Each structure stands twice: as structure tokens, then as C-alpha cells.
Amino acid sequence: HAHLNGNRVLEEPAPAHEQGQVPGCQRHGPAHPHHRKCALPLTLPQTQPLDLIKTRAQMLQEGKGFNGIGWQKGYYPMTMFNEIMAAGGGYRKFYSKFDAFLVRTVAYTTLRISSFLYFYDWINPDARREARPDYYAMAGYTGGMVAGILYNPFEIVFTRMQVDELYPEQVRWNYRNFVDGLTKVAEEGALFRGSLAHGLKLGGLVSVATGVYDYIKENAFYFFGPILINRLVGTAAGVAVAVTLSMPFDMLRTRMHTMRPLPNGQLPYNGTLDCFSKIMKYEGTSKKMNNLGVMYSGGQAYALRLYAIALISQFAMDRYLGNGLMQEYWQPARYYYAGGLDYDFHDPYTDTYKNILVRNWKVAIGDETFSPDQKHLMLGL
Image (cartoon, rainbow, N blue to C red; front, side, top):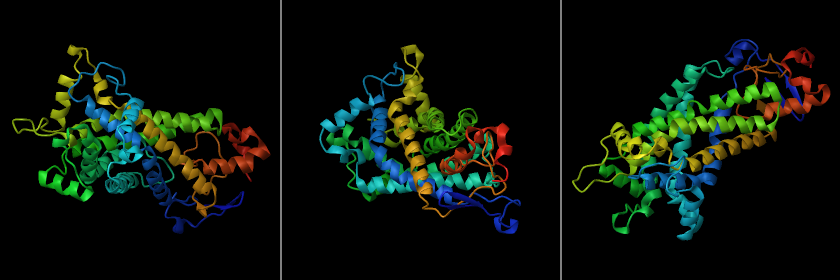
């Protein structure tokens, strides 16, 4: 494993029986998942206004035909932001009830990531490598379904708080706090309403985004070397795929969480499949010059939020690891060089180790340090 000591990287092989892996290799260890999880509470509050805008855009879309490309009938994120600010209450309004926001944030980060990592580590026990795409998808959707069910009671309460202001005063839920909202939702028997759509949304969010980001970044590294554009482009590609796969289910979740009984006493949707079929029949049918964009109403705010969360988390991890706040940084011990497509070597979540290589070896050897045809130059360092 590699010990960080100032600007030096000291290679120290660990005995195989201590590593719990094959000889000459160290597991990345549980620190990385915890670091990623700790970064989310830092990024979610900063981007929460975009989540409120996305949720309200989904609500305002209900019952209307969608004939735009990516947005509908003037519900642009900045327009909605200005309208919310003009209504008074300041930025505090974007967080609804602070206690509900904090509880929901903690539950979201803990359940979503822990569920995914549990199944990911189970299906991919060799921590030296990224899982195959199909393994990633299985871990993502299995963990997403578990998290979607367990986290659903927290989300339904907060979602109703987010959209409550859109209704006339006499028909609002008016939850005083999170406990009051949870109690009333339980009395309604709706704690797990929409949990199927919620689980599929989380599955689409976590199953492919990292894999796409990692693939793009690694291949860009092969051609361009260690430059920032690799991270920006890779993150954008991962976010695009995550939005495509997760947002339709997020729309279904929002509709299921916020639906109210009709005048005849029946609920408008009998389940996730019924909700999807009615949305496509009345809002997304080509017979009325509408399109599938109905499932992506509010998508600009959603994509921008995911992109901001990903980048802020990555740079926060760079700073945390790069400042020496972590005494050990686990890497495979038998690799002494960086170059090209080497999945045994890199860690997709932070550029800290790459930056160490640049500081220590690029200055002495030059750009060929990162060429896969020049690995022999790194031997013996």
C-alpha cells in the first residue's frame, strides 16, 4: 500500500494474510464509500433549490399536454426561481421545513449509498477492479429497490411539503413538521405509496452513472493525459445517462406521492403502471401532438443539480485526500506506474493519486509518463 509523506509516495508491500486479498494487492477499503457519503450532505443543501424547482415543475405538468423539447409552457427553472423569490420568504422557502429537510437528507444519503454498496461489494468482492456493467446494474437496481422502499416514507412527507404552496389554502396538507407529516401519512396508509417507482428511480441513478463516468474519464486519460476536461466530460456523460434512466420514474414517484382522492373518492392512480399509462394517454400521446418529454418535465433543474453534486463531491474529496487529512491512501502495491487503460490502478472518485503522480514523476520524466508505450520508464522509481 502507498503511504503519503509530504510529496513522496513510499511503497510498502503488505503481507497477503493481512490484506485479505491476493498477494501484492490492497483492498481500497471502506474509507472511499464513507468519504463519498460524507460529501453528499455538503452538496445537497447547496443544490436544494433546484430540487424544489424540479418537483414543482413536475406538479405543474400534471394534466397538460407536453409538446416542448425538454420543457413545457414556460416552466423554465429560472422563471420558477424568480416567481418563488417574488412570493416572499427568501431562500428559506426552498428548504420547506428545516427538520424535514435534514431528516430526509440524512436518510437519503445513508440508505441509498449503503444499500448500493452492500450489493456492490457482494457481487464484486475483488475491490481492485470496477464491476462489470451488468454487475453494476444488478447492484444498482437491487440496492435502489431496497433503498426506495425504506426511504419512501421520508420522501413522501418532504415532497408534499415542497408542493403544498401550489394548492389553495383550504386543501393544503399543512404539515407542521416532519413528525406531524409522517403521522398523518401513516394514518392515510400511504407510507409506501409509490415505492416501486421510487426504487426504480434510485436504481437508474446509481447503477450506471459512475460506470459511464469512469469509462469516459479513463479513455480520455488515455488520449489527453491528466487534464481537468476528462472529469468535466465524464461527469456530464454520467449525468446524462442517469437523468435519462431515472427521471421518468421520478415523475411517477412525484405523481404517486402527491395525488389526492377524486370527487368520487377514488385515487387517480391505482399503481405505478396505471400512473404511467394515464400520463402517456392524456399528456404524452402523439395523437394530440404531444411527446415523451412529459416524463422529463423539470429535467433542466434535475440535470444541473446532479452535475453540481457530482463535481462538488469530487473536488471536496480531492481537497480532503490531497491535504493529508487521510494518513493512508490505499492502492494496489504491485503497480508503481500510471499509464493508459489500467483498471487495477486508478480510483474513479478522486484525482488525488493522479495528482501525486504528476507532482512526483511528470516533472522528472515528462508527458511520456502517462503513455502506455512508455511504462518501462517508470520501473524502479
